[in-house]
Image 1 (cartoon, rainbow, N blue to C red):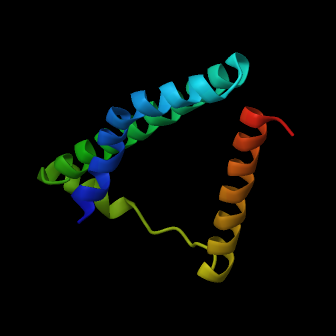
Image 2 (spheres, rainbow, N blue to C red; image 1 turned 180 degrees about the vertical axis):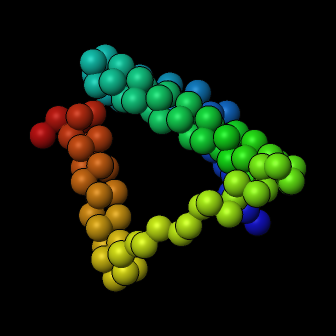
Length: 105
């Protein structure tokens, strides 16, 4: 299951050309340029993170690197009661900003 989740960022750039064409048709050139630039950076970061995760997972199979895994301790995270609503608000704010940039106020 985890491997399937890591394959999503690697396959997502394959779906981006049709979406980029739609953005070019619907937005002004400046908004389309910024949207495509930011999305390309995010896709690249996601791909690098997924490949790095695969590399670290593979390296932990080697005994010398597996010993380093004992140095990592889980981080304390806030309650899900706080994280999920904040994530939903951030997603809504991001979508509102994209719509405003493409179609105007």
